[in-house]
Image (cartoon, rainbow, N blue to C red; front, side):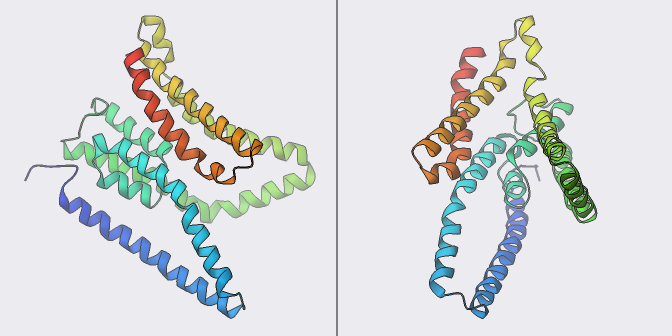
Length: 244
């Protein structure tokens, strides 16, 4: 049987896992509604809370859909669907999968036909993100206590430390964007495509934030991320045609 990244068995396996996750969500939703009744919270308030939460999940869902489409060309639909439906993000999944494909000398956008390469992508994407799940129960309490003590002792230094950690995380992804930018000195302008896409997405995000603040458009803050993602991906087409 030839290997396919879109084989029906992959959809079945992924569907079972996602069904379990959805069942957990339904279970806790039912428990929450019952608890709300025990606390005397009105049914109208519960209904309003559930409906508003459901509406505002549309924004991140669009981001997830865009991410699945972006990854599906090489990895098929099943694996990105699983990774981004349970635990994952586009910024992480793209970097993890692309590193494996580059190591295996698979051209960007090429459909994987070798099962060993596909399994390598699965393991890298899964094990790397699972490290957080393992470390959080053991390290979060100590880190939080340390940050609280630091804040009580020196609030200004605590803010600097928080900002430094955040910038350190962002720098890891910025390095991926700018790692080949010096190739422009060799006449290869294609290395500027990721930079242009990143700047375009940032501009769209800034415009959304400006409109949301100036004109009090609250819903725009929830849809700024998917709009910047979709806008950046759309602009990647003319940038690619221009820069090659």
